[in-house]
Image (cartoon, rainbow, N blue to C red; front, side, top):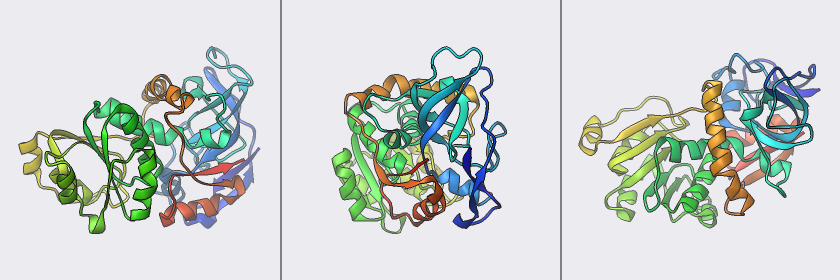
Length: 325
């Protein structure tokens, strides 16, 4: 099979087309003919040598999500059959014409959804749903602050917030991305100039935001502590602005704030399966009913993986970058 491999740590140019043996499913696993995959920040970090793949994944083939058709099943597989159209999560290896994963890490695609659309869903929507609902316990009527609303997770969180009945405030670096997020369910937008947004949040919600989805990290976290409500929950998802910062811990005490860290790729298989099962039960039906839709920035061929990585690093896109195999 054809795949895209990381030849050495470095820039997008280190991504090369290679031929690899077709993987065989073990017990409980299925093999999927990959029709499309998508690009994530974790792929860029892995390419640079900063985020090694889990031990059970290919060490040099990135790709955390796939959409395609089941073409082989291992012993003990019960939920899926050859020919099923599926999408879901991997620890890595998605930039290839075929991949194997546990059957319970996949869900059946809704009728009418294309493979390109399906590939743009799993990482963004599972991450957002797990953070908002499972970790933060977002309830209808609450106020949610979402950073980087133009990202894959950001666009997913805005839509899920609307579906759950929350008031969604979002931040972005440009007004254009905020405007593009409004049809998705963004109630109010803030251009976070210089990483400052707390005063603007308080102007919109004097008591503060009940839930904050922190996709930026760095000094945003101290601003979050100013912007969050008493008994609020800050879910730390991304660290684009850095892994270290200085915060005012007295705000944590006074407001009784919960700061929750979460990561999807490095979780044990059983935790990934639990997140996937919640997604299949609570989120996939909303796609089938037209309440949610993937947001795609651009679709490229698998051979254009280096170009796709460069586009993601530029931060000019809105939504997911999809690679068609």
